[in-house]
Length: 198
Image (cartoon, rainbow, N blue to C red; front, side, top):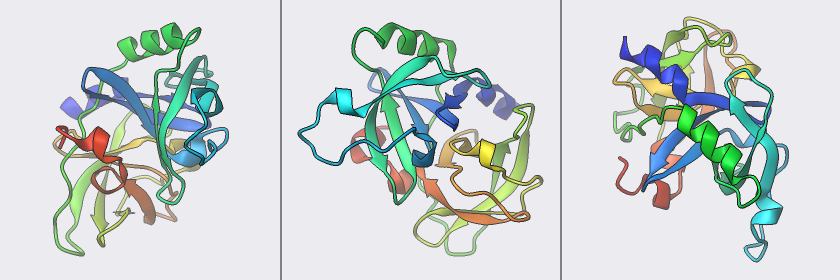
């Protein structure tokens, strides 16, 4: 199944996971904002230094060793986008991005309320993608009928449609098999990143 190959696009990000996407020839990491060590300052006059984390990224399951700069964060939607830091840490980031696959961002779920869409989630042990369904009420994604429990260590993982495209970010755990307020990419990512990708 093609969805099994998507595991190569999931990496360690802060206290959870993230996944790699590509836009305009540049690679970014999408994760849950609560996986970051801290939220960057809100003032726009702060430079990259105040938005740089390190080390924060690594191959899936490894201890963080690459640095990244926060390019976007929405603490209410619980989503963040990380990009390449400046020198002297850019090479570590670039090497990690070259070793990972880039996931495609799926189009928006324009289905009516209570229309359930099949999806997949990467298991906590990263060995398999298990089935679930997702739905939304105009905002975040709700996970229902998950074949396994969604646990805290899965935060920042992609929610992947059956077509193999990332449609959301795991932000909330499920109890026992349902949970909500997971960021929806088409709804919560910044326009500059979504442009020409949906």
